[in-house]
Length: 111
Image 1 (cartoon, helix red, strand yellow):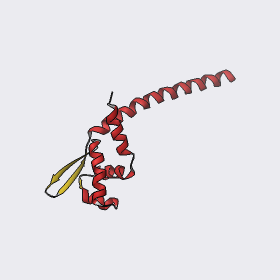
Image 2 (tube, rainbow, N blue to C red):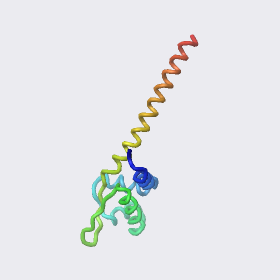
Image 3 (tube, one colour):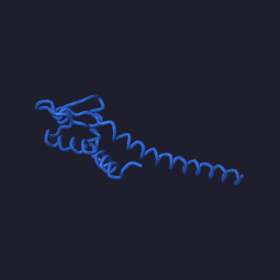
Image 4 (cartoon, rainbow, N blue to C red):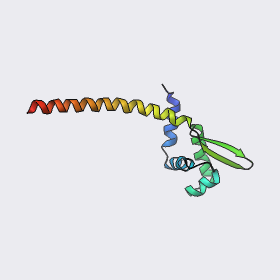
């Protein structure tokens, strides 16, 4: 089972729209903090704080090249989240299948 703290950090990072937009942009390829800030319409300092949250959650990796900080998607944490969501998806699918059977049987007895 995935550690609770890891999931807490990832879901907290994903709870902010700006950070989700950063991930969408990085899905297109690497970008600098300045490029991300310009696209988001916020200051470089403000965006750097968002990147730090994403980095601490393992969703983004950064590399300093000279004076520029390059950002890339970090692939590992979404795998953890996908596994956790998949567990509950299967649970709910079984419950919905059970309801479907129940209502199908109920329809048959009403006739």
